[in-house]
Length: 115
Image (cartoon, rainbow, N blue to C red; front, side, top):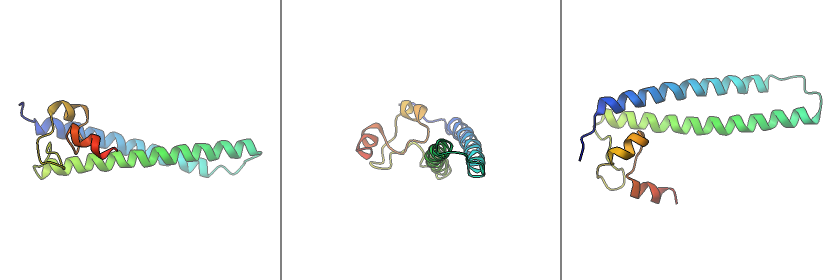
């Protein structure tokens, strides 16, 4: 089994964190613009703004969740528990970590948590 290059994954996770933080800031800015729209002329405009607001809210929640997972993975690197499945304590495969650096579980247990 290959060994984990913790520095490689920390760099990737830090880059993901910065990108997510930037994206979250951008979404929040857009939401502020939407909420500051004070000239709504008709029902179509109002419905469109409401739809945009709902879309941005869902996207913001998803991005915030991803950010919390990345932060959790970074804390695991710091605590020297990165790459260990939180269900069974076994090593998560490098393939999985390369595909999803913030993975908490091995493939088998990840499937169970999604049910």
